[in-house]
Image 1 (cartoon, rainbow, N blue to C red):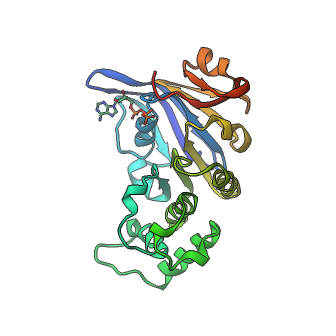
Image 2: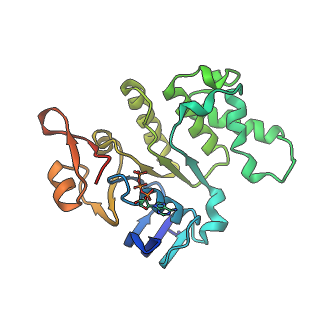
Amino acid sequence: MDDVIELKDIWVSYDGVRVLESVTLNVKDKDFLAIIGPNGGGKSTLLKVILGLITPDKGSVRLLGGNPRDMRKYVGYVPQYHSSNLDFPITVCDVVLMGRLSHKGPLQRYNEEDRKAAREALKTVGMLEFKDRQIGELSGGQKQRVFIARSLVTKPKLLILDEPSTGIDSRMQKEFYELLNRLKSEIAIIMVTHDISAISVYVDKIGCLNRQFHYHDSKEISPHDLEVSYQCPVELIAHGVPHRVLKEH
Ligand SMILES: Nc1ncnc2c1ncn2[C@@H]1O[C@H](COP(=O)(O)OP(=O)(O)OP(=O)(O)O)[C@@H](O)[C@H]1O
C-alpha cells in the first residue's frame, strides 16, 4: 500500500527567503505524527505543500499515492479554533453537514446519505446527543469535537489538525486526545501543536520543524533536545518539564 504522505527533499521560499529546506517526510496508514516547532518555523507552509496549495520550488509530493490537488478531498482538515467565528445561529448537525459540501455538486441539496454520515461522525466523536443544539452553546472542547466530526464526515484517510487543543481547558484536552487516540486505529493523523506536555503520551512520532524537519526518535522529548538538537526554544514550567514551544524564534 502507498504511504499516506510522501514528501521528498522539499524546498520552499517566499520572496527569496527560505522557509522549508530539504524536508523529507513519510506518513503511513494509522501513524499519529505531531509536528512541533517555533512560530514561523514553516508548519503551515508544510501543511499547504501536503494539501497541494503550494507548489514547492523543488522536491516531490505524493498524497495518498497521487497528486495532492486530486487527493486532498480525501483529507479531513481541522483548522485552528477561533471562537469568534461561531456567533451566528447554526446547529451542530448543520456544521457537520458542511463537511459534505466538498463532495457535492453546485446547488445539490443534502440527502439522506449526507444526514446519515453526519450522524455517524457525531456518534464517533461522542456528540450525537447534541446534534440539534446551537454550536455557540457548546464548550470549547465540545465544539472542537464537532469540528472533528465535520472533518470525518467524508470518511477521510488522513486527518490534519492545526493546533487543535488551543482554547480547550485541561480536563477537556485529555478527553480530546483520547478521542484522537481512538481515531488513529482507523486513520492517519498529523497534528501541528505547541503542546509538548501532551504529545509524549498520545502520539507515535514527533517531528520538529524549524525550516528543516527532523524526526525525534523517542516519545520523550527534553528541553535539551528541543533547544540544542532542533533549535526550538522552549518555555519551562515547574521542575524543568517543557510545556510549550515558544512563540518566537
Ligand atoms: N504567503 C507568504 N508570503 C511571504 N512570507 C510568508 C508567507 N506565508 C508565510 N510566510 C513566512 O514564512 C515563514 C513560515 O511561515 P509559516 O506560517 O509556515 O510558519 P508556522 O510554523 O506555521 O508559524 P506559526 O506557528 O506562527 O503558525 C514565516 O516567516 C512567515 O512570515
